[in-house]
Length: 211
Image (tube, rainbow, N blue to C red; front, top):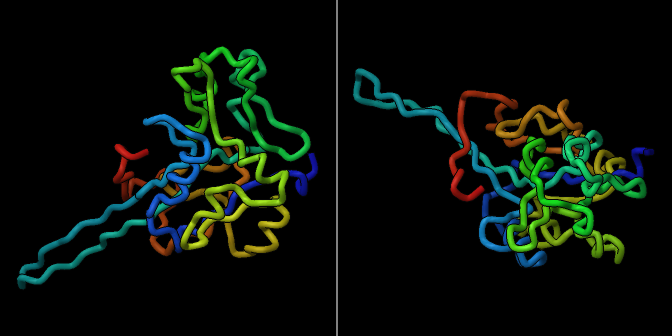
């Protein structure tokens, strides 16, 4: 697959305020039930306040947000884990999709994915996930999460387009995300000034109940 046929996302974590408008608009577009989110906004933070002997205090407290969905990886482990071929990567645009007619709802893809992208629809008994708003792409529009972001912290396009548009963006090797070498995600990130590297123990996800 040539790189210019691979779609992906861009996330500016220096702009994201954690408002979750992207998450809500995605949920509305896909009519998702409670507990299922194709896009999630992680809050990662840490640090502490230290009282000094003279009564003053110092601090190194930090926090930042990262809006993450399926990254339509170049080496998707979800497709390798799927026993039926329901989870597959399209040759035409690199989007990773699930065929509900073939899916048996075994959740093997969910257990394999380091980004928690595939999620079970318990009512239908099949896996679901971000499809890149493929019907919008076919009309020349951006995914709903991108268009709804009030801070313009998200973008979508071919990876060639995104690299040219955001030359300072880097691979998504920031906490709380795993290292990009696992699946080679099609995701570029502009790192927040407080960003910690993948696997950092300097902080933790502060909103587990929401993600």
